[in-house]
Amino acid sequence: MAALAVGGLLAATACDFRTTGVTQLPLPPDREVVSFNQPAPTNGPPFQPNNDCKSGTGNYRLGAGDKIRVVVLQDTEFSGDYEVNATGGISARMLGPIQVVGQTLNEVEEALRERYKEGGYLVTPRLSVELVSTRPFYIIGEVTRSGAFAYVNCLRVIQAIAIGGGFTRRASRSRMTIKRFYSKTSEEEYVTEDTLVEPGDVIRVPERWF
Image 1 (cartoon, rainbow, N blue to C red):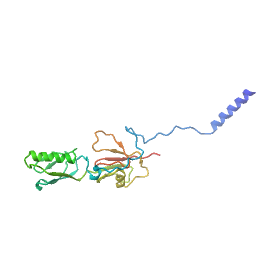
Image 2 (spheres, one colour):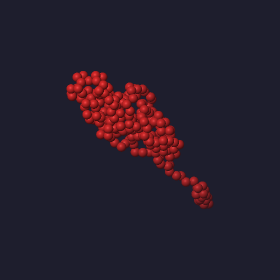
Image 3 (spheres, rainbow, N blue to C red):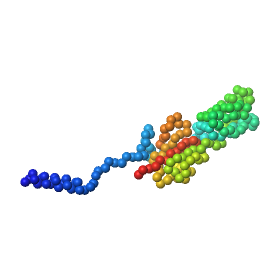
Image 4 (tube, rainbow, N blue to C red):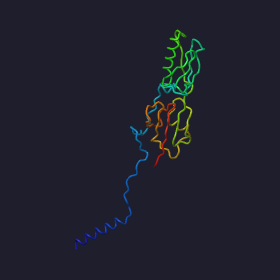
């Protein structure tokens, strides 16, 4: 009788389990996980003003589409505005083509001083190179207006997003990435809203799934 009672109890329990209709499903995959080397940051670094940001130039490296101004103090005929062409060069007064792509403004200054001195044009060249305008930056993904936008000094990601009209409802703010203009690989890096943006960078705002 005890065996029959236990059997009946097990049968009733099994019956109750089958009639609940509840099935334990696996957790849904995180569709926003991508194969980057570093995890996404949880929040941005504290804002720390530095000389690079204050000047708007810092270690900025020139690329095609940038415009610079060369000011030669000894003789204004050597001064002029130049746009870096598709081959990465400018055609400086009296010197002809000079490659400047990938160089900082200080490096261009030094190169021009050497060329003017070696060419016998100026004994002690005193000149400066200024950045007149830069190539644009780009935003793609979940923003109101994606596309190319004019760069402004000390631009941060959140300001760039504002220029693009702000986030859409589907935007994931924790998985934003940047493809750097001078990156040697196709790898993108995770960024926060406080990350500095450079001209030519591509900001990607992915869609959130949950």
